[in-house]
Image 1: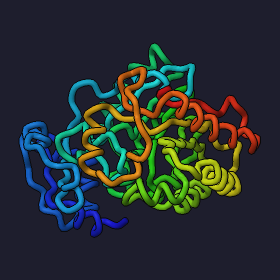
Image 2 (image 1 turned 90 degrees about the vertical axis):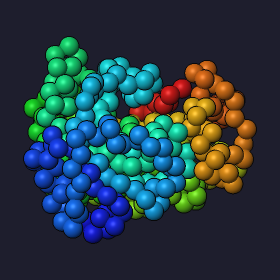
Image 3 (image 1 turned 90 degrees about the horizontal axis):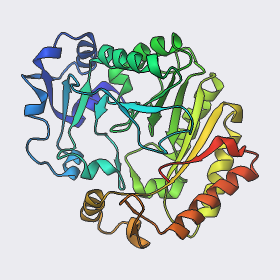
Length: 338
């Protein structure tokens, strides 16, 4: 993606007055040279104040640039990451340019408009304070957005790289479905920084992961990063029921392992498709004919809507057993949000 393509994507670019001279804001606007930014006093007075249907993102998407306020780094939910050390996530952006049919964002915010936060120095300051008590903590980016999809515009990760290089016990995970790694490859590979990719077999990805790069393209990006020495993580999440599930995941895992140094894949997380009640209502509204609805769901142990326990066990164990058959050690596999 180039800056012209992204300028066409955004109808308006709105910038908080307080961050207008922030170096990160200046950098972002330099990548959108034809944009005429609209200066606003307070992002929260504009963003999401008028309810905007999720699918308006297809032809009416705005970009907000501002300062994240309040708690910048938050404890992650149980079973969010590898067990053991504490896990946190931090918010550097809201919403996503992709359109995955199952995405929880469609029922979470009142708008699909994107927000890019630029006060990374304050986020890092909060991370530093957490490390005083939890020096081995994990920090995750990509909870409410995709961590790399707009990195060619934001290029914020070099700031985090320096910090985590100087704090080698802490771990940083960038979660993505993007192949936008041009600004990552020149950085120094660090043992404690992981680039992690959500992967689905090719056919389900085409059907459900709208506007994302193909599975083949993601594996190519993973190979480039692996060859350059970067640490990798793989999320088979969400796993969606299919009669061809075993065949599809066997092919996917074969393709991945043939193109990646397995020693640099730190872990595989497995999770099934899941929704809150509000998100599922939006999925039904936005994608009424989707095959997501072809198998029944129940209200699960945490009030989320999931497949039944026997179905979840079958899906998860099927994919796990394929990994084990390929000599992936069981210690590298964990179940997400189960």
